[in-house]
Image (cartoon, helix red, strand yellow):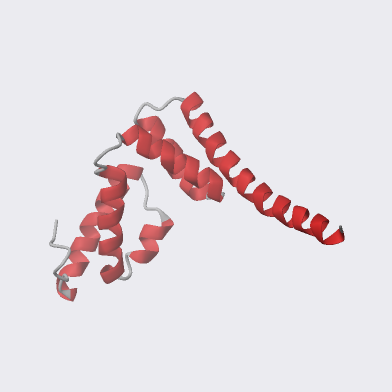
Length: 132
């Protein structure tokens, strides 16, 4: 891994990008669209993959299964269809059960629903108080 404080020279970026794309393909079995597009800009792709690796593959306080369940929950809350596909498969490959995946999706979905209701009901309540 390169020192993140020192920029990688442009002539070295291509080989780093190529190497990281290959690692991504090995992990996921394909190249996610975000990685594919960002790889065209090594100066952005390299720090992006550094952060991704730290969050998803080298967590300090969570185990891999918990990280994937958090990703699934977040993706469900944000309606990130493609992220759900990637992280459900990752979770299954780590031994996460369908029941655990379902519950993680329900947590994220509930958070999203509650956010929407919280906003809507506040506006609704405000409109009532203006009528009084």
